[in-house]
Image (tube, rainbow, N blue to C red; front, side, top):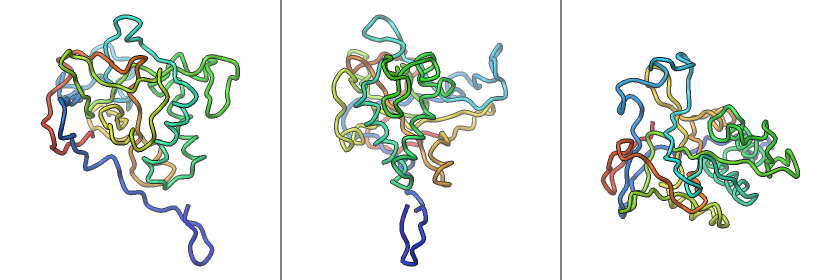
Length: 238
């Protein structure tokens, strides 16, 4: 909030950080295509999908193969708090830190996409809100968001944040856009948009960042779920 000369508070209009994206100039980067690009239709319109009319998170699961590439990875206290910092930055500081905490809490709800059975609703601890003290911390899913980019190494692995280590400073996280994604959601007709969690607070279109995490700093993705994107070009994740 900003204090005006007349003593009233108002909320500034955030500068959108989720548009005007550009691929880094060095490294091998790949974009995760949306459902309509890969399959010619959306998951909602595929036979047997349980929610044919729902707006759903536009997720793309990484490969789970062994303990080095699990379905879900536990987040330390420091990583949970650092992601609140990232959410606050993503809002262009148009929301308060406590509001960023509330956005974080919405992201880790069981039904959102990222924690599932490892959410506070399932008894796991959220270090940020203090829910379920004495229990194991929440776990984050092995999930990317379509429309975003990843950095693929020569051996086929994809870079992610190694959450077995302490989180880097905020500015270092921001400088590695291939290790976190702008959360995307998909309508049944294939229209892609941003998650609304920050937007509903600041009343202005604003993206929501989500991390790519791993116990060792790497993930695996099927090659057919990635398309090479040139260094230095601009791209749109929506």
